[in-house]
Length: 412
Image (tube, rainbow, N blue to C red; front, side, top):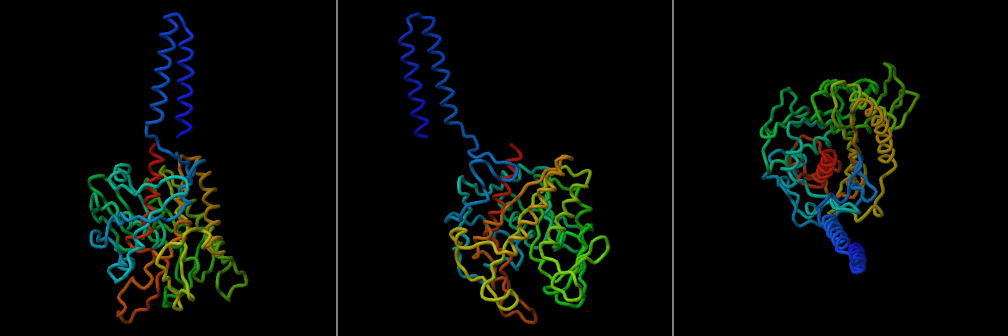
C-alpha cells in the first residue's frame, strides 16, 4: 500500500511540473482536467471495496487458496449452542453429554493468504433463495448438514418436510421465508450396496458393492436440486465384495476370493458412478460440490479396541501431522474422478466444485465427540469412541464458511 501511495505522489508531482511548463490557457485547462480525472480514478481504485482474492472454480486463485491455512484463536465463537439449536443429533451433542472443555469451540479457519469470513446466515439464505440443496453421502455429510441448519437457525428455524418413513436417513427441511429446501440422502457407499450378513453387527459387517450401479434412493432425485454436496469415506473400510457388470471382480478384507483389491479401487469406482449419475441427469443444471474426505483421529489402538481422540487443541500446522497413506490414496482417487466428471459436466452446463476440507479437518483432532456422544451408564449397547464425526458446534462449522465463500464466487 505504501508503494501505491508513493507512485501516486510521484505521478501527481510530474503532472504539476508539466502544468507549470505550459503557458497557454487552453493547454493549462486540459492538463489540469486530466490531472483531476486521474486522481479521482486512483482514489476510487484505492477505496472501492472489491473482493481482495477472486477465486477460481475450485476455490483457488493466484493469490489465495482458501483450503490451505491454519486454525487461529477466535474468542467470538460460538455462533450457536446445543441449547439454541435443537437439530443436533445426540451422537454429536458433546456438551449435552458432559464434555468438560470448551476451548475446542474457540478457533476459526484462517487461509494462508487471505481471510475467510464467518458464515453470515442472512447472506446465505438470500443467495439460495428459491433453491434446493442436497447432502449426499454418509453420516459425516449429515453432520455437515446439521451444522448448516444450526448456523442458519439464527435467521429462521426450518420446517421438517420429510416424507419418507426413514426420516433419519432421508430428511428434508424447508425455510418458508426463503423458499429454500435442504435434504439429506444417507448413502454411505454412493452406489447400490447390500449387507451380505443380515445378522452381523453393522460396524464390522460384510457388504456387497455394485460399483457400476446407481443407488436409486438418491439418484432418482437429482433433478430436484440446484446444489448437490457429495461425500463419502469411512464405510469403504468395511469388508467388501466388489461387483461390476453383475460379476464379482474382487474383494477387500476377505479370504473367499482370490482377487484382493485396494480400498481406493472401490472408492474411486463409486465416485465415478455417482458423478456419472449426475452428469446423465438431463434436467439437472446445477452445481455439484465434492466435499473431500474427512480424516479420523484415532489414537492409542484400533478404532474398535479402545482407541480414542483425547487431544484438546488443533495441530499448529501440517508439519505436526500428515495424511496417512490410506486416507491419501482415497483423497487422490476421489479427486481424480472429480476432474474427469468436471470436464464431462462442462459439455452439458453442469458445474463441479471441489470443497476441499481435508487439510482443515486433518488439523483438528480435538473436534470429535470421542466418548461424549452418549451417557456412560447406558446399558446393553456397544459404544466406540467417536473420532470420525464432529461435535456441534465445532470445527465442522467452518466447512460451511467455505461453502458460502464458494457460493459467493458463483454469484459474482
